[in-house]
Amino acid sequence: MHKTNLLVINSGSSSIKYQLFQMPSPEPVCSGLIERIGLTGGIITHKVWQKGKETTTNLQQDLADHEAGMRLAAKLLTQPGTGILRDPAEVAIVGHRIVHGGETLTKTTVITPEVKAEIKKLFPLAPLHNPGHYKGIEVAEAVFKQATQVAVFDTAFHQTLPPKAYLYAIPDHFYKDFGIRVYGFHGTSHKYVSARAMEFLDKPDARIISMHLGNGCSMAAIQAGRSLDTSMGLTPLDGLVMGTRCGNIDASVILYLIEQQGYTSERLSDLLNKQSGMLGLTGHSDMRDIGRLISEGDEQAKLAYELYAYRIQKFIGAYSAVLSGADAILFTGGVGENDVRLREMVCRDMDWCGIALDPEKNKSAAPGIREINTAGSRVKVLIVPTNEELEIAHQCMELLHKK
Ligand SMILES: Nc1ncnc2c1ncn2[C@@H]1O[C@H](COP(=O)(O)OP(=O)(O)O)[C@@H](O)[C@H]1O
Ligand SMILES: CC(=O)OP(=O)(O)O
Ligand SMILES: [Mg+2]
Image 1: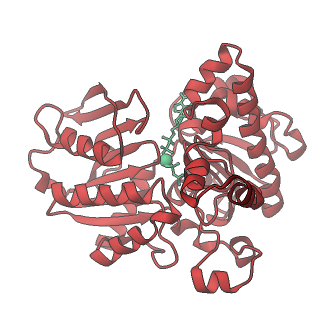
Image 2: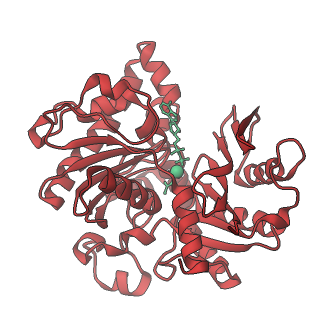
């Protein structure tokens, strides 16, 4: 069978993940994770599967920004030793995760100069993401010259939100004139994990509360595969407490800082996007660092965890109302999939809405989708490892081969 080499690049706010697929096989032949971009102690894990053998390369290297990360990924993919490609021209398609598509880029699309210009126009609405994606596209265009570059948008899955969920209660013309509305993000992940959960539950009309908890965090209320509400808004700043973002905040805090403390918009953007969230509360944005502090008895770290979990619990309550109950809640993302303590805190005292966590199952580190609720729990509690890269690969194939 003819195989298509398809490289997927998923750049998040703190990481770049990449996978090389030989489509239609869903198993990658190479994958990489570049973590802690912009922090000290960058961690790089590059894996290659060839002739039934797995080879892993681990590097520790500080990476200042996403461009440095993308250049390293391209080098690891193509250089002798770690490279799986003899020639970059072997890659036929590069699929890029793009966080913000705005009002016009609502579906998976081939990247043209016009699409790039639109992604650039949206920099202010996704300041931690779209600039990195743009650099990623430019590096990929330079290295994989022959490939078709495709964009898959985080916002696309949330196009099904009803107006009562996507409009803000400000004069209507702000939506009509400037496109100010809830867009919602992490859509590729919410779509992928909810589809896996519907299969697992064998329930195509399932009511699902999906929690993507990574460096960026968002929740979605999903029914029968359609997103009905989500916690991020015009930008990926709203909703939950995140690694460096504040989530929900009274807009008057911003007015107060401008009027009474002389903050400029630049300082405010830096404060709310990059200095807040867990970083602002504890001095650390990575939950592994904060987990270590808790184990050492740090009270502030414990309080920050409580605040993070409490916000999630409130959204579970809200989305139970949106969906008139839930069949399952899903944990995914770097924190959701790995952080035992956090899952325990989120599910604590939630029996009123039918959620009962099994503490032993919660500790299991088994791979793949798994159920961690007690036998009597009315709502299933699932860990569903996300795979944004595979979802992006499928969407690229659908677009280009109409499969
Ligand atoms: N074993 C772990 N325990 C707790 N948190 C973890 C663990 N592994 C990763 N994380 C958290 O996951 C975050 C990264 O999640 P990820 O979904 O990859 O982020 P991104 O938003 O950059 O895509 C890290 O910042 C870290 O807080
Ligand atoms: C939208 C968003 O916050 O993405 P990430 O979690 O990958 O930073
Ligand atoms: Mg991510």
